[in-house]
Image: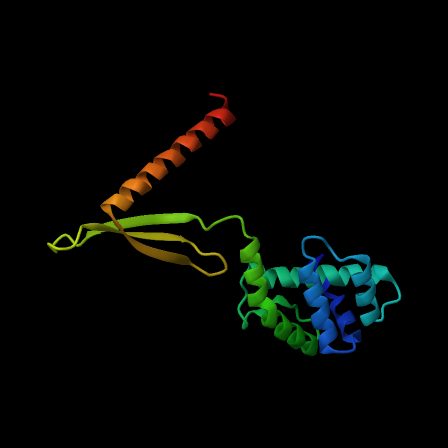
Length: 190
C-alpha cells in the first residue's frame, strides 16, 4: 500500500508556489487532531487545481505520513530524503525536504507541549558528597538516566540533595507507593 500512496505526491507540482505547499503542510499539522475542515479542504483542492475532491485524500494521507515520520521519528535533515522512494521526483523531494526540515523543530515543540507521558526512568545512581569537608553538610548526588523524547539515546539529570530534602522526598515517595498499592488492590480486587 505504501508504494501506491507515493504516486499521489506529484499532484503537489500543480501548486502555484512553494508557499502553497507550505500552507498545505502547516494546515495538515494544525489539524492533526481534528482533520481538515470543509473550507480548508476546498482551499487546498483549489491550490492543487483538482477537479475531484476524492483525489485529495490519498495525497493528504501521504503528506501526513511524511510529517509524522519527520516529527515523531526525529528524522535528521540528512535522513529526510530517505523517507521518499525513488519514484518521487527529485525537485519535489528537495522542496518537501526543505519544508519538513523548516517546520520539524516547531512541530516537535508542539508535540512536547501536548505530551502527557513523561520520559521513563531507566537507572538511578547516587554517591555521597561533602563527606570530607567539615564545614559543608553531607549531601547525596543523584544521577537519573531516562529515555529522552525526540532524542536518540538517554538523557542524564544530576542533582544534589541534603538530608532534610531527602527526608521530604522519601516521605513523598512512600505516599506515592501507598497510592500505587491502593490502586493496584482496587484493580486486582484484592
